[in-house]
Amino acid sequence: MTATRILFVGDVVGRPGRRLFRERLPGLRRELEPALVVVNGENAAGGNGITPEVAAELREAGADVVTLGNHAWDKREILPAIDELAYLVRPLNFPPGTPGRGSLVAEARDGTPVLVVNAMGRVFLGVQLDDPFRAVDEELARHPRVTVRLVDFHAEATSEKIALAWHLRGRVSAVIGTHTHVQTADEAVLPGGTAYISDAGMTGPWLSVLGVDADRVVQKFLTQMPVRFDVARGPGQFDAVVVDVDRATGRALAIGRIHEREA
Image (cartoon, rainbow, N blue to C red; front, side, top):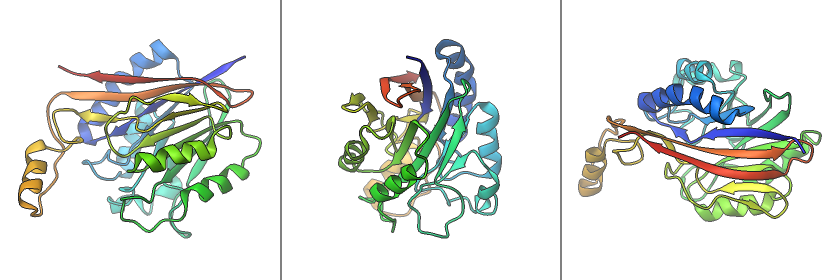
């Protein structure tokens, strides 16, 4: 049995998150030897969205694939460029005609093809989207020969995330939840060999509210008035998930969390 190791880095928030990713990844490569590095970058530019320049920075720092989410279009500069960025994946279940791609097949460093699918939930997100369950089903049917399959499910409700994992159990190697920026402790390999975690967490400033300046967020809750959400400063945290997959069968062998904080 030969395993392919995938490192999935939780939502990168702003400049602090990009710094942490750039600084921490070389050590993790030496220590863990991942064959593929996937990063959620939908908050990587100023805390909301991504630009071509920021996407390129993540790529140069070591990301093989960059996934997105509900803030995919917050920086309009990405719209004319996303089709040209072959390593960038936006949610699959945006309506037809949306630019970009919802999945890609990446070649891991050990030569294993890995299907990376990005999907977005519909519960509590306030956006009009196609059904992520059926959208992922259809995408899997387009790649019957790719055995190693990872789904980044960018969603708010844990029930929706868990339900998708059970729906896909035995058909994908891993379902990794993103969006809430709080790493969960429910990692497991489900029956059928699908690794799961409700949220991979956040890579960004931890003295904050989900990466945002805490005082600004508290002000918003107290007054209900419009407030500019700025990325917080100070020490950061690096959150990630490691998944080992049997490359012949696509079944996950193990899943583990990484949660590190600067003093």
